[in-house]
Image (cartoon, rainbow, N blue to C red; front, side, top):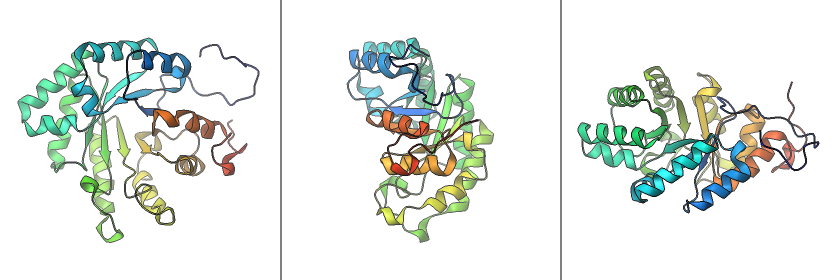
Length: 264
């Protein structure tokens, strides 16, 4: 851990990196270069993974991508590439996918995110894709969820057993983590309709460490910590990182967690 300006404050200690629980999966800002260096110099101990959107990774210059990855290496931060870049590669066929995976690994990308809710792909094909990426030295995060292609969600169209089956199959095929997309669960619906019971039924059959949950709302991230504890893996925007850490150590952002998080 780096030197902190107020080392005697009794904040609860976080497990040092590399962590397998309490992971902060952070969406990178659009601006990279010096912006990333400054961010990680200040908060690098709190960032486990920086996620580039697929469009970022595909449209930034090669030199910018290499600089981004190099900077992350300096601060022991893993680099992930999200969708839609894999969807585009899949539309080109197996050779294009293999070439993309090889190039990503050569550049130094650590993690590839593959979605089951943006395109239709057979579970067996997904498992083969996970195995292929893993053999090339890439970790895989599989995104699952209830809102296919940003569609409207109602309770009659939630296929819970399928979500549980996908989580199990993808994990058995070698998926590093399963990302539970928030849309239709705690995003784009009224707060009173948040589907916490659906979330729990998806997560409960497997180890909590196997999942990453998405939270862009302060009360949602606090609620996850209230239910599953301070070491739940979570994906947030870079602008929410400090709010998440506040919740993990019991100092906000929601008053029902204030001073209530303890460790042994």
